[in-house]
Image 1 (cartoon, rainbow, N blue to C red):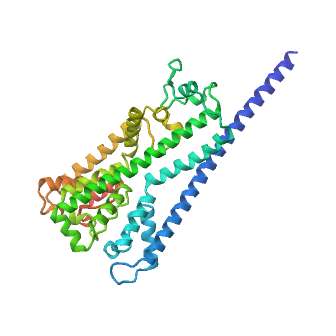
Image 2: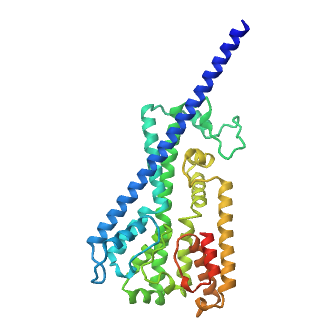
Image 3: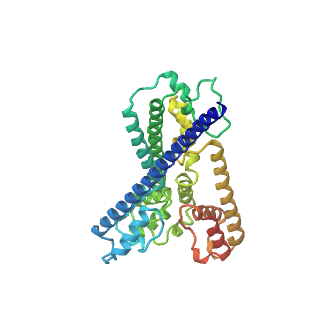
Length: 385
């Protein structure tokens, strides 16, 4: 009798173990399939975007009556679409319409915009799940899901996932996640548009009011609106393109312009996650929406890689500021009295150095001639990149 009970218990344990491994394998396979599928969607998106950009450059006429090589045009289109900051043709060769096309490519190929497409894709998948079982969650369920019921203790982990509770059914959890993804998508879109619109407005105003900066564009035949929009979008997308052949070197004495462009290096790159979290906190306080509370408490569960926890955001800010401070001190120590700083006063040297070290890690714009910078600083830039 004891042997029979032992065999039955062993059989039960084996079945439960096999069932656990089967569920784990299905989950892992689904996860891999999703990311694999997402990778090919992004790959096809960037290829189509680059091809459309190439065709647009091919059809439109350059500023100068020169024949541009097809490979150079396609290479430049791919570079703009992928924010690679590499160009095979001088930027001043391109006409105003071509510069606007580049601006569109950089906007659509930027990290923030493409991550928003991932949110739309994830939201579409969840919408299909919700439509299969369209039972709206009750207010009580929403409160449990959002961790608003005090009787549910929070774990010490970084993200508390209340959807694991037996009280919450799958349909209500999926519906809540879908609503959160929708709100997050709108938040990212608003952030993307407003930051660049404000930057464009201030840069345009500066270029209009400051004669020295305006004269540079006039001599090169570049419109103020085109330059402002192009530069802000390029900086935010971390592309590093500037409509001038010399990049930002011709504006190294325009410290105000450099300071207006500088924040976009951070807002569209390394400091985007902390800024996004700060925006969600503000929206939660203003709108009192439950979805924003869920986003703040369950950043990992949402699945958006740029939505980080408070602790990770603090670490990220400290890392970015620390690395840039190291570069700034090293650059000023070794290059303060060298050729690249000639003609600049103390204030202009500080702003130009800050602009250079920040772009070395992120956007790729340059206010100094890199060929004239010492080898030690170049090695430092490479390490920081």
